Amino acid sequence: MRTMAALDRPGAFDDVAGDRPVDLVHLARHTLGDRELEREVLNLFARQSVIYLDRLKHARGAAVKAAAHTIKGSAKGIGAWRVADCAEALETGGERPKGARELIAHLEEAIDQTNGFIRSILDSD
Image 1 (cartoon, rainbow, N blue to C red):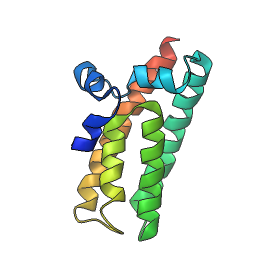
Image 2: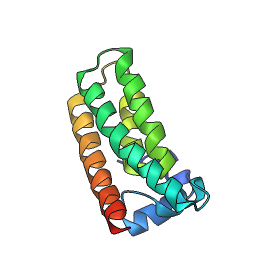
Image 3: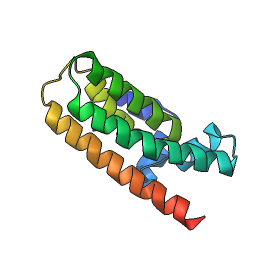
Image 4: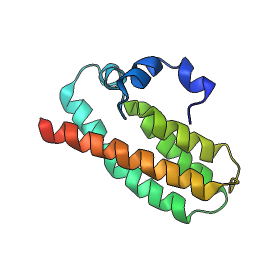
């Protein structure tokens, strides 16, 4: 579900080639290589993504766009491009986009995969 704009961002090809849910190079750049900050940001994403996904599932109107926007921003911060792309599709699709259930299901799958990857990183430290 990659958009052309998604391929323009730094590290996009590395993410595709590595097939990781989180672009670790982007994350390291974003946190200036501070490992403790990386852990904090990853923990925050894992918690926040679940909360906002739940809000999104029950949202109507402008709340759909707001929840999707929050998830997208958090995902971009850690380099979770698939999550960001799924959230952006919901955000730009209007108040209740056509196929919203399917889009939310894709987003949930991407978040689950990303959070599993995050757990594996945090558990290995």
